[in-house]
Length: 245
Image (cartoon, rainbow, N blue to C red; front, side):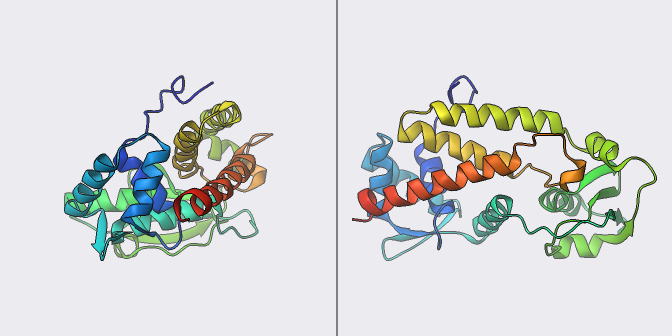
């Protein structure tokens, strides 16, 4: 099992730069370091520098004195990725949070922003205008959600595990997680490991992070997170010895 068989596209110069900056804290590196990272993947210096210029022009990066930093919207993405790696959970008492859309005559941009925010909060849509999930996460609700919704707390009458299985494709998520883990085990180059690790991080963003009582047996979420943390430590060591030196 490889990145190719999983149909994961190879990383471009842009994606190498973006994935690298998303993975460092603070997300700021000089151009010469990013060039060296590109070299690890066989990407020429000129190609990396062109990608950097285009990312600044498109608003992905901010450049100052030869150093590149993630722009604000990508800082928000980094925060979501960090939370997906180490989710802020709390003991679950069986209650569910329900968001009911109460705003009327919403323009299309507001509707799109709300849907994106609901997914980031790991809420699932039961029907149009009603989103819910077990109340086991602590996170801040963005303004677009507060303005358009009213939140309630309730206990479902139906089996909560069956409700969770109807709201999220848990078997599909678990199957993909196991395929990624198998591919990582078989990866032999830094480029392949980096590509697969980026796919793992994207996959973790889609983990509903449900209470253990609502998950199928042998849920691979914690194992996949631990595996990614090991990769992150290895890559940080690589940056220290081969890029920042």
